[in-house]
Length: 324
Ligand SMILES: [Zn+2]
Image 1 (tube, rainbow, N blue to C red):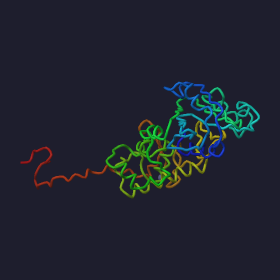
Image 2: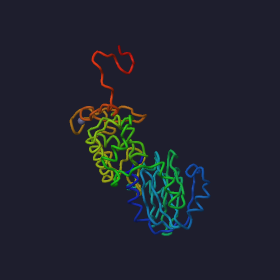
Image 3: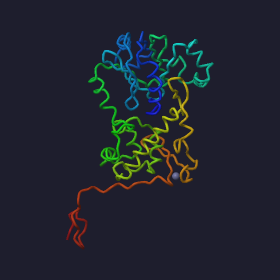
Image 4: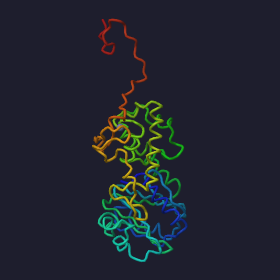
């Protein structure tokens, strides 16, 4: 599933190629993509608009359009956004089969083949923006106005981890009093946005923190280590052009290489690159979670701040009211 580094890689590739171009026409080939809005309505809303920029919030890709509209795309499990440049001579399907840069036969078999095409936009320079999706969980939402966008994103996306909003203090505030495991805490998009299963494991390993530690058990030094771990893991992903362990391809149809640099994710039974211990796999909140029991500390749940009444010597447990 594409996470922040994968979506940001696509954004960086698309922005210089499509900014300033007019959308000649849009075609939604799968009504699930725009549900509950009718595909025709989205198509009509897009046709003729100019793309003013490409942004990202969490795992959402945002196409800013003239007339104060925004097309919000989410790739979910297996979505890919692919740009077919204006000078591409062949049909996309031919490109997939012949051009190794576009992933070769495997790509053709998997997600970007035309049979998985859900959405296409023709651009004024003759290029095409394609959205493919094997599992069909991806979404496209056309929003009007800044307020419409804010109202859509507010309940879905929290702090941007690569912005100044994420600090040890802000992370500690978010985690305070939370008993959920750190792994689940990191996957919550309304907390720190953009982190999924891969980068949560990689961030926790960098921070020396056990994925089952209760989020609220972090002390300031742990929050500091975790912020560093998150930023390092995401930046490593960006530098590698994302991770392609399943269907992910960038906007040019190429694979990322972060999967070759994982420290723990998918590395069950292999030695930890830091301490040599054996990496283990457990399931946390239904998600496969990889960590090193040797160097990732399991924090204890912190006692509540409330002051307990001082015990009198010889008294039984005061809370039971069974004092002599
Ligand atoms: Zn280790």
